[in-house]
Image (cartoon, rainbow, N blue to C red; front, side, top):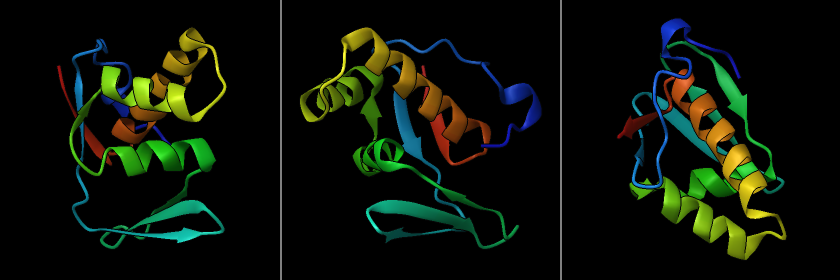
Length: 104
């Protein structure tokens, strides 16, 4: 995913940090179990892998980092620290390209 400059790592993510999709000018569809997103204004598009698709589905409603990781830990056979690290990476990546907001 591309980075939009100074937004990178601007936030300290805590278990109570809340994530919400921005979805302004955004279309999304599922193809073979993975989500494809397209900004209708800029023409940019992104493909999400299976795990990122699960995270995208979860944040259809605003959720905290703790709620997201707790759910993923029940869905995937993964160690908690790795789950948190990878989830944070996906969420920050989505934020950096303007697809979600973070409330700390």
